[in-house]
Length: 299
Image (tube, rainbow, N blue to C red; front, side, top):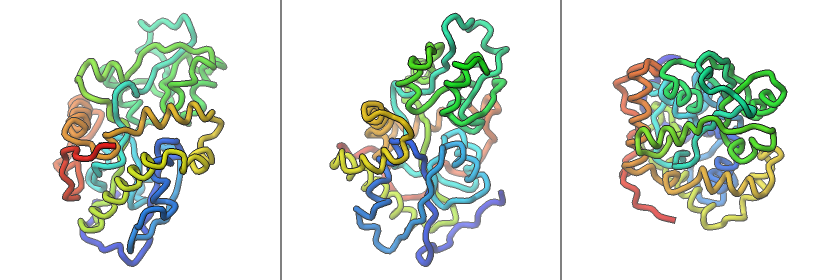
C-alpha cells in the first residue's frame, strides 16, 4: 500500500467507516450510525465485518476510518493514525488460550495453534508469550472453539464472547494472555483501536474523534436503546453474554485512552518491534487530533 499524502478535504464525500459486528463496537457506534447525535456536515458510509477482515481491508486501504486490532495498526502506521477514543483495552479482558482437559502445556511451542487472524492482537500476544512467532493457523474467531471440540486442533486462542462461553464446548483455560500481559507490564491490555487515514485533514479528524466519543457517551447514558442494533449482529449470544461483553470491553479507556492507555499501546508496540513482530516506523502513532491525552471524561 503506497504511503498516503496528507491534507485531502473529505467534506464533499461520505467517509467510509468500518467496525466489527461485536457488541462492544455496535454499542460504541450506535448513536453515530443512527444519527442520534448531530454529525453536522459529515456523512458516513458504514460497513460491519469481523475484526480480521477489517485488518486485511485496511491493508488494502479500503476504509477512511476503521476499527483495527492493535497488531494490525502496528503494521499500518504509515497510512493510518490512531484516535484516542473508541479503543478496546482494559484489565481482565485479554485473549485466552483454551484446550480440552489434559492438554500438556509443556508441548505448546510445538503445536499448531488456532488463532482469530494473523494480524490480531491475540496472535501477537501469543507470540510475545512464546518469545517466538507461533505456528498459528488463522480462522474466523467463532470457528475456533468448535474446531478444538471436534479435535481439528488441540488448542486455540479465543477472543470476544469466547471468554464467557468456552466451558460450554468442554474446554478449559490454559493461559490467560491478558493476565500474563498485566503481570509482565502492570498495564491494561490493548486489544483494538480506531484509526483514520492520514490524508484526512486535522479539522475533520478532530470532528471524527469528537463524534466517536459522543457516541460512546450517548450509549452509556441510554443503556438499552442500542439493544436491537447490537442483537442484530451478535450471532447467537444471550442477552446476559451481550451485557457481560459490553461491560468488559467498553470502559473509561473507550472514552479516552489517557496516559495509562497510551503507555499500554506504546509498550505493546515496543515489545513487538523488539521481537521483530512489527516493522520499525518513525511515524507518530497517534493522529494529530489535538485531543488532550489525559482522561478528563468520566461516565
